[in-house]
Length: 340
Image (cartoon, rainbow, N blue to C red):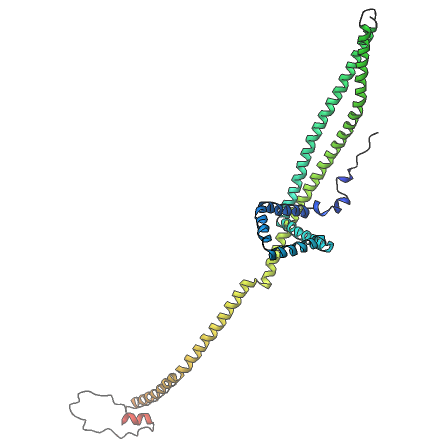
C-alpha cells in the first residue's frame, strides 16, 4: 500500500533553520573566499618555495621561521584560537553577505523566485522523463503478456503433436520462455507500481511548487510596493525634517552669509554715522551764515518798505545837492552795517 507523501518539507521545517554555517549564504561566500586564497597560493607557490629556500640559507632566518612555524602550530592546535578565528571569519563573511543583501534586497528576492521557477521547470522535465519511462515499462509488461500467451499457445499446439519428432522439446522451450517472461513481469510490476507512486507524488509536488512560487511572487511584489512606499515616505519625511534641522553644509553657508550681511551692514552704518559726524561742522556753519543773511535781508526789506533803501546807482554826473530827511534808523545792527 502506497504511503501518502509528506509535503511538510516543502514549506521549510525547524531543521532548515539549523543549517550549518557552510550551507548558509555567508558560508558559501566564505568557501569562495578560501578558494580564492588557495588559488592565489597555487599561483605564487614557486615564489613562496624560493623564498623559503632563501630564508633557510641563513640560520637566523631559519630560527625565526621555526619560531613563526611553532606559533602557527600553536594557534592551529589551540581550540580557543580556532574558535575565535572561526567566529571572526564567520562575522566577516556575514558582513559581506549582509552588504550584498543591502545593495538591492528586492532583486535578491526576485532572483530567488527565478531560481524556484528554474527548479520547477527542471522538475517538469524529470516528470516527463519519468512518465515516458512508465509508458515504456507498461508497454514492456503488455508485450511480455502477449508473448507469454503466444508461447503457451505454441506449447499447447506442440503437445498435440507429440508424435512428431522435436515437438516435446519445442513445447518445453515455449513453456520455459513463457515462465521466464512471467517472472520478468513479476519483477517489473513492483517497479511499475513504485514508478506510478513516484509520478503521482511528483505531480502533487509540482502543483504545490506552483502554488508556492505564485505565493512567493505575490509576497515579493507586495514587499516591493511596501518597500517603495516606505522609501518614498522616508525621503519625504527626511525632506520635511531637513526644513527644521537644515542641511549641515547648506546651513553653514547660510549662517556664514547671514554673518557677512550683518558685518557688512554694521560697517556701512558706522561709515554713515562717521560721515554724518564729519559733515555736522559744515552744516552748522552753513546754518549760521544763512541765519546772518536772513537777518540782513529782513532789515533791508524793512528799509525798502519804508523808502529808506538806496540802490546802488552807476555813473552819477554829480552828487545829489539835497539831503534826505533825517531818518531814525532802526536799532538793528544789520541795517546799521548796511548804511555804513
